[in-house]
Image (cartoon, rainbow, N blue to C red; front, side, top):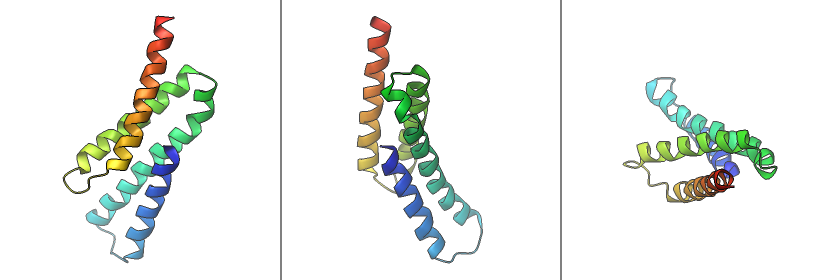
Length: 106
């Protein structure tokens, strides 16, 4: 999931910068879209090893990044229906929630 967001964020910012726009609020907003994807994707990637080791801190940090991406997708929904990103992050969130619930039950 993290690689998907990271790659999409890099591609997004690359194509935005290739348009040669002047630096203004619109360009800044577009670059921040890519920044959100890159940052949350990196967080998901960096927490992967901790999640594999079943470390709670990694699960919770990954959940924060995943929810952030889902909120982002909800905010851009009127302009871009990012179905693949939603499905991937919803799947990850469900998996993380199942892990948390299983640990609390035990």
